[in-house]
Image (tube, rainbow, N blue to C red; front, top):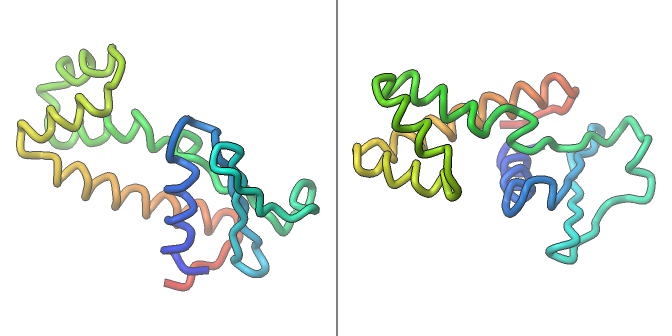
Length: 136
């Protein structure tokens, strides 16, 4: 399968609330299947459950790409501001406020690059572990 296809489905299942959407990939064909009650999509084959050919695509929290990723970035880029970031994440709308904070520090582009690179690395490793061949 192409990495872009895996990345697209990964982004789809991470849109909205956690576990609101789900997706599977066939090891043998690389074809992806999505189900989302919210979006009214149900492409899942009838035999998806219990069939070793299908692997559920994890969400970002399953791959430690949520707050863990934030702390990795903070440790590398702004370790002296950990307390400020901790304060940001102690209230609602933390990610929006975190991104505004990074924008004020002129680090938002660096965050997006870091997030994209780590997501790619982690997804490729996950695919290798699950026996899913990535073309590009």
